Image (cartoon, rainbow, N blue to C red; front, top):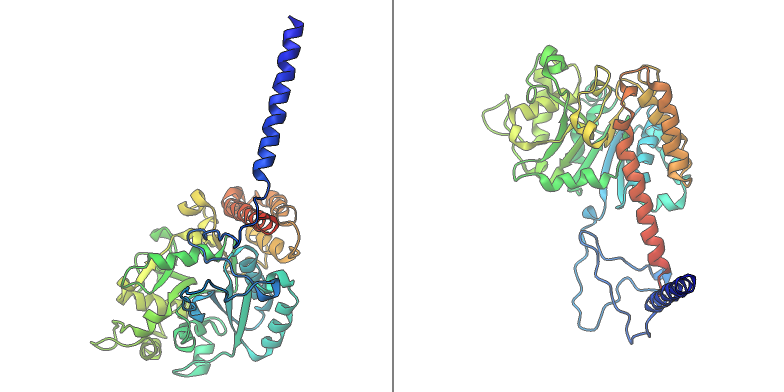
Length: 411
């Protein structure tokens, strides 16, 4: 019986070798056709463009082929705005760093800053590796207020925070925009929150998250002395805006029977409620959307995750299920020891060398740092903070592998 077994084994080996040979032959490049075949683009993505420096022509097309109109400049990238004054330089740079680390599409930064910070922003951003600087363009603007008393606006709540109210007036050529506070960190691509613009109905022109998930412990429901949106109010630290719609809408208000444009409404509204508001421009936004609830799209708490969502016990179901998408370290938690989980995320992203391995130099240090935070309520749910960022890193590596294989594949 041994001889038939040996024969069978030999035949099996020959079959495997033959199969490998056939597979290798099928992967061999076919004879070069007269014109290279064009692969159809993946759904939801623009066709890849060849750079003239790489040997191709960006405008090359077949004879008789109709030239497609260029996409408007304002739609070619995702617009991200931030306002930085005082000591917010580092926070702002770390926020921008988190944006470029994970996002796929090109970004356009709109940085509103005091004059003294402008050269520092320009210098720091130029120091980033070219592999990242090519993913964005930046514009730095002075702090300006088109209506009312500039000094009043500048001192409203935090230095310069009221600037966000004037973005629709200043950025007239921008259609849509994501505004974030300086103390925000992106744990997944901006591309994903940008997609929420497509979910707006015909009347919605802005999107924010609730200030709290539970009215009984929410600030607005307990202490506000002015109108506010919904049962818990809104947090404006992450705000998605369709600026075109905002500019063209007349808003209902408590000032006159008819509607007012955004710019017409701002200063009179502030004058009426200035003795009743605590959180400055955020309170004014709550008042505006109290009278215009049909204009607001409310996105869930994982898109604006703050210490309030875990410091009293976990109360953001979306983050429990999907992980934190955008971290908002308000109350200065990146810079003290009250919420070490938030501080750990900030410091690990701050210290991450741009071109290092994401898992080795970012994800694993995070896991290690989280072991020191289990004595806090937020630190007892590390999966909430790690789930989305792990998923994002895997996607980044998958995209890099696809790009690498595509660049090395021969036709």
